[in-house]
Amino acid sequence: MKKWLLGLTALLCCLLLAGCGGGEDTSGQPDLGEVRTNVAALTYEGEALFPGLQEPGEKELQDLYGIDASLFSEYVIGVSDQGVYLVVVPKEGEENAVKNAIASAMSDLGEQNALYNPEQTALLENRMETIRGSALIYIASRDNAAVLDAIDSAGQ
Image 1 (cartoon, rainbow, N blue to C red):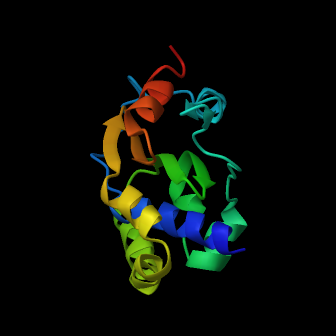
Image 2 (cartoon, rainbow, N blue to C red):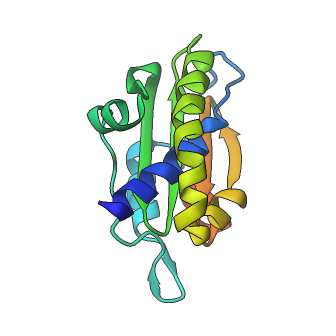
């Protein structure tokens, strides 16, 4: 349960900075089904980059953190005790609601994470944030560039 909480905390830290330029630009947007496969196959120093990778569902996001996943038109989120990645396509006009929900959850959890998991905190501090089409991408792992390459190769 502690690892799950840590992973979700990392997820929420990444979502905190979610923002979107709006519009329906899907050019360059990755295929989310392929993202799952590509990222799950990544290794780091001979081991899985995201060991024990889990995908929290809508109910878990809502019940544990007050994040309404219906604000996304589509998303894929992977959580592990070794990091997190998110590829989120917000529904048009819902960017502020997403930011507010994440800010509320993070104000409660941010301090706790720093106290008992400094490694996860370091990953979050060195996270990568970018946009592909209308997809917002957040990566906090031991090899952010490899994760982004795996995401970029999805759907090409």
